[in-house]
Length: 215
Image 1 (cartoon, rainbow, N blue to C red):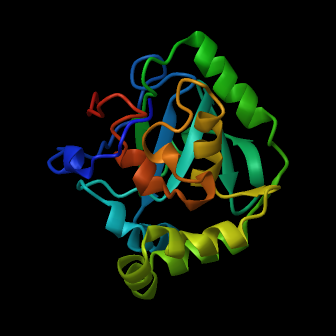
Image 2 (cartoon, rainbow, N blue to C red; image 1 turned 60 degrees about the vertical axis):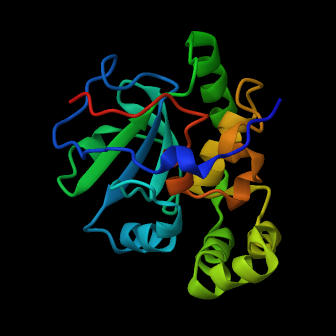
């Protein structure tokens, strides 16, 4: 049975940003998802602005990644497409905040399958056109279209702009989760992966265990 995404579950979360480096095995593990935000980065601020409609907490996020090792992640990045990257690059950036979310009932088998799914896409290019679709869909005009014609009308542009061989970060993370039977069409994954943004992923109460600041 598929859950209904009840936004009332998200009305009063209490989140805090962290300022020291997380520890592997304590604050995050393989199979966790990281979500980042940098106030010093123009693109990060822009994504946070366009996805502000989904924000139910004090936390802003603009990028999503999958943890694949103690200092490694797999991500879809504008500068290199889908690639392996170092988590320490985020930890050592004084302007960057990173938050980790643990998928519900995560175990070693699910974590391995999440990483394997991500590895299959390494080398794919970044989907610039889809980012443009997200920007319009979340603009004031896009929100008006949603109110008048429904959410599917605004998301249609994202689906039209989507290239199945290219990825943006949140679409990539949503894909990795959706490919696992434990999470398929769960929570926000009821929407097509290409229409999901990082903030929606962070806020989802069905895919992830409750977020807390362990640092």
